[in-house]
Amino acid sequence: MRITVPAADTVLDPDSVDLFDPALYATGDPHAVWHVLRARSPVHKQTLPDGRSFWSVTRYRDVNDVLRDHTRFTSSKGTLLSILGSPDPAGGKMMAASDPPVHTAIREPLMKVMSHRALIDRQPQIRRIVHRTLLGQLLDGGVWDVATAAADFPMAFTGTLMGLPERDWPRLTRLTTMAIAPTDSEFQEGSGHATLVAAHHELFDYFSRFVRRHRGGDDDLVGYLCAMDANGRKLRHDEIVYNCYSLLLGANVTTPHAIASSVLALIEHPAEYRRLLADPTLVATAVEEGLRWSSPANHFMRYAVRDLKLHGTQIRAGDALVTWLGSANRDEDVFADPYRFDVGRRPNRHVAFGFGPHYCIGAPLAKIALNLLFEEIVRIVEHFEIAGPVEHLESNFVAGIKRLPLTARLRDGGEELLRDAVQEGMSVR
Ligand code: HEM
Image (cartoon, rainbow, N blue to C red; front, side, top):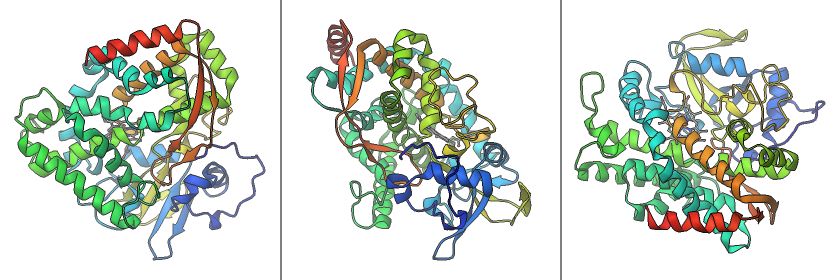
């Protein structure tokens, strides 16, 4: 998605905006649209030509209000615009598409193996993945497409965590992107609808066979899902399959774009990159700012459980509400100078990982990986430069970058550091 700084006097008729259209996020200017909606129509209704409609919630506090309260806003009927108005077959089975108590029964045991404490020992392994799958390509000295390279990165650590065979990773990466950007010409296999259906079918079939063949044991996340105690019972086969899908999708379609967008922001704000080089202790706040800046998960949806008012607007039971996380993360009532990219921003209570009971369960893993990656970038790269057109993903769900060709000048001694690290990464897996 293009990340812009809207002019304070942006003129736009809220009734003319189409937040459903995936093309808006590839070639349009969603930040300008959200800027106007936050000011003039913070709870805004859009009706599609086929009669389906949804409310767009664009202010930080309203977004949090919707995401925090499952008693008023349910996840069990679907949480993505792509299935607006159709019942979600994963409802009540997949953690992301369920409410307590089902949600809690799956989430609590999973949190034990996905917490920062449980995953921190994987740091050396993830650092090797950083060198092998991403930064090693800098040794070629030519044009490096960071967006393409980053697309394979989460599969390497989530695939390993889940115990998925490496030979399957490229196809799984493509299928997860097809599922979230089915109208993007690069990922289309048939019409948009056919692409979505085919991706879901192949992914569910893959996990169904994988789970059946799994020998059990909790050496990996899939085995753990099969064996874990979900409030006094084991998960059924379909529940395990849905949650495998959700874990893989959650990791694959978001993390690459946090990387590419953060690198692009550092190129576009060279003084902020110099600040980071001068003080690498800023990496942690820079990663958070990259997450706020890029907000890779663009929206999540809920349905109103009963008639209620939000920000004074009457919502009816069954109405869909879409929370735009990228908009909440630019709310001028919450973030000082929200359109400034500031690697040292504090406080930074962004909602890139959501808010409330469904707060991203993969956030500790994503943060470990992003921190390691940017620590290494700062150790190795002196300067980046854009080397070709930047291309954005056509998706209303993921704010993504498909191509970010660049060249890099390495720091003194950076090449040796990188060469050694890549060799180590190849020898130990
Ligand atoms: C930069 C990376 C990531 C971003 C921006 C992100 C964003 C989000 C957001 C906004 C939600 C909230 C959904 C809702 O409210 O309905 C969420 C939930 C979730 N994420 Fe992530 N995610 C990231 C990485 C990951 C990773 C690495 C994994 C898995 C290893 C993952 C798996 C999940 C799952 C399973 C949920 C559902 C949690 C629940 O319903 O309780 N995510 N993510």
